[in-house]
Length: 174
Image (cartoon, rainbow, N blue to C red; front, side, top):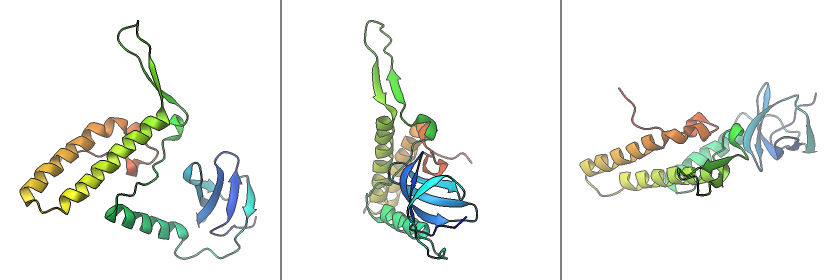
């Protein structure tokens, strides 16, 4: 088996087209156009579109990309790509009214999830603006508590997130 280098382009039967952004001893880290970052086994079945024959860098493209993303998140209101948990992909949210004479409403769960992540991103931007504002420290703390409680109210939706690190976190008990 020939090891593909970072930058190789592949077409995977399940995830579609993607670019290898990191290589470990057991996995390729691939950023797929439609499905975001996935890890696949080195011996997985996929079509090689273009092979990059370079050595595996000590600082991978993934590390550079992650660092740049963190900088952008910190200093701008750029939103990150947040993957939905696999079990919810393509699903729908059905809202059944208590009155049986009324029609149920269906929403693609991907649309609902996108709206939830937009709320989270806007809360983060608000948090940054509060922290960098000219408000006095007590006002900042008071507003920060409202945001923390808002995150706590949104933890119900954590089941939708693929990555635990991207979930809502409310106030932690001591």
